[in-house]
Image (cartoon, rainbow, N blue to C red; front, side, top):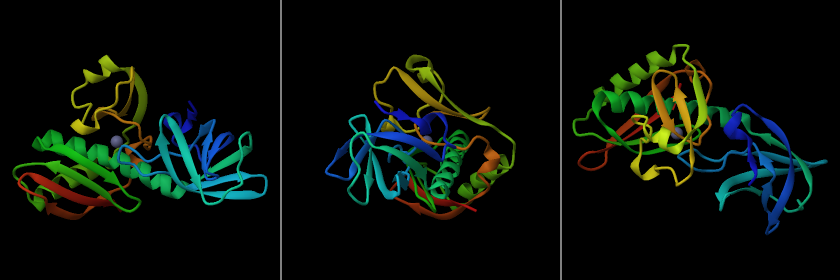
Amino acid sequence: MPKLLYLEDSYLKECDATVISVKDGKYVVLDQTIFYPKGGGQPWDSGKIVKENETYNVVYVGKFSGDVSHEVDKTGLRQGDKVHCILNWERRYKLMRSHTAAHLFASILCTGTGALVTGNQLEEDKIRFDFSLEKFDREILEEYINKTNELLRKDIPVKWYELPREEALKIPGVIKMAEAFPPDIPRLRIVEIVGLDKQADGGTHVKNLREVGQIKLLKAENKGKHNRRAYFTLE
Ligand SMILES: [Zn+2]
């Protein structure tokens, strides 16, 4: 199992690594990685893997049977190679800010209205948010965006840590999406916005709400009887 450095330190922008295996010349597994693989509503990280003077662009990162596979844009990497990894930090940092914003907004909206989150997808320039709510209009959303923005101006820390599964599942609201229920693993990773929200989550987040900035609503849609979809973005 490779070491997933992004789970401990989401601010790590570079690391050294050794190539464990290469499949079809372009799918590279490393002994440790800073690249986040697509999953849990968060897109993959892009960036570069450098070997001596040769640069391989990372175009996709996915998780396959426990391994993080880095798809690079050309062949040449071999098992045993010592490489240096460099993250596209601008993209990743935006995704971290968006991810923390999405948790906060979900928590505020669900607590305030009883809405249930049914889906959540981050993109580099917007956040899609699906939820189930009977009474709905744009004003309700604007109200909760404003509440979220008020909190985003405060100095509130965000932390992540592991808990034994049983203990984690006792936290109210720790699982926001039924279908995204974490697989049967003994310890769950919790992302906590201190005093406001705790969620089981494997994504990368900022360390303080102040880093997010402000968010604004782009679009709200009705998707069937109680199903709503909203897009928002970082300002
Ligand atoms: Zn999340």
